[in-house]
Image (cartoon, rainbow, N blue to C red; front, side, top):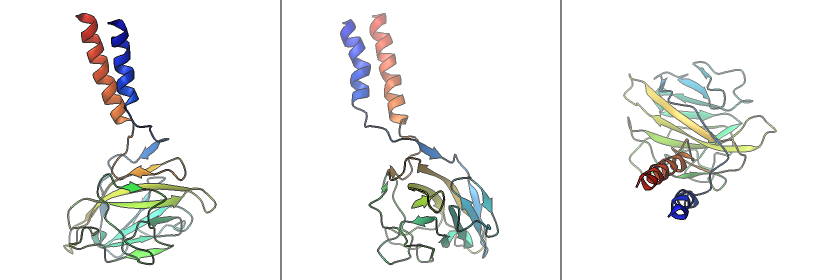
Amino acid sequence: MKCLQLLLPMALLGAIPTAHGAIVYSGLQNIAIPYTFSGVYVNIQTLGTSFNQPADFDTSPWLNLDFGGVDISNGVLITPIVIGVGLDQVSNLSGGSTVGPAGIFASGPNASTSHLGPAVDQFQSNTPGYIGFSFNASPAGPTNYGWMRISINDSGTGNGTVHDWAYEDVASTSLPAGVPEPTGLALILWGISSVLLRRARAS
């Protein structure tokens, strides 16, 4: 019986997929995207924001969202997933989609204005969706992958929202859109196994 009690947590943990290196999560931000020409600039690495183009726009990973999110622009060091090679439309990823080396990314500085609409890979107004992106922390740095959750507001008066984002800090490593903590399942299963083990010992 004691052997079974010890094997239960191990068996549960053995069923858990191997975790990523470390996913860096922004925490819930809910940054307003004004319906203005400048909109808001978001630095996915430093969590910095600006309502004017930063001096380091092309030497740091900034995304620019303006007109409530109807326009999405990027500099040199961060490129969003687009719907096809040579196209500029940022793709709306579904939660759980893999963001990694196999993605189709903008080939450089890009401005997307066609990502709002009824198609599956387009964003719908006031409905959260995911931008997948690759970025380099510096011009000579390695490539990392991440996602950003946004809601677009095309009403002409209200703000869109940058809800949150995350990226994998191990270079060239994929992550699922919308998943900030890959070890969450492990912690839940470990908690369940601990409760079962205590109950088994009590009986």
